[in-house]
Length: 420
Image (cartoon, rainbow, N blue to C red; front, top):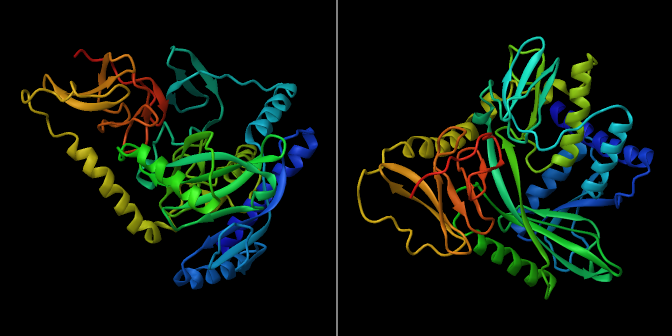
């Protein structure tokens, strides 16, 4: 209960910090104060929500159980939390960038760091061989690209699909909504063109590299949206990727017990807006030597939750082990003709060629391209996501473009080209 109170307080402070920052910088980031709802349609889950509302109130959140929402369909119950907000993240971040530069800060984009040597100072090396010295280093790469604390054993990557469609402003539901039912559905709207708001629906989560039916999942999500909100013209679609920690609490603080100058922020589990702001403030306190009441709660070196997270830890590692070990079974040196002749334009598959696994992609012009099929992070075999045109690793969520270029870590090196 003490941890829950600290967690609630840290997240509420993050919302207030964002509001104060937007006001201080005078940024128009479409800030909207609104309530957040966790709802269910199945009556058998109502007791669960009532208990959730009570636990949230005990933790200090302005929460209550309700059966009324602004959704265009009935619900069996919901937890309503007030004093919440939503805003346009890029507009907010660009204002932070301008403020940082005015204060003498510098930002460098398109610079991929591939190695870290700890010391006083620490030394970072980029993929171009450039060396950068720094007293303190924060590894904030979503999934840590440097993992001397074996955090990969406590993190599970999760990819989730998103669709969006404009709706008349009068028909847009007020508030932000999420349900654990139907493989999770999140619903909200955002300012759009005159007289309209953008209806944004998220769901259909899966582990990267484990689903060949992503297009079908997009269709399922669109079907759910139309059944609940009427005929929609879906104008946008994309996917998001999050990392869940085994004990559901983010990992923010010193990277491992033997370091004094390398920090990490990861494991936000889909709550990265407030989690990221909380992490920034916490890391600032740690680096400058100030006390923070919730530093122990988020400390990556924590051991108090090991027993509680043990079951989830073993479950996660069993999944990874199946790929990690199974993918190392040597392929046959010879065998039937690789199934690439029937590969449709835009699709990809992993085949065995010359005793090695090769990832083959046919582009929209019909040309075949091949790269090494083993993820450069820890060697698991990648799988092709046709809907997003990417090779994905099922072990730790690394993603690569069809030509092998790194799209998302923890991998930092591309898949090497292979001859067909």
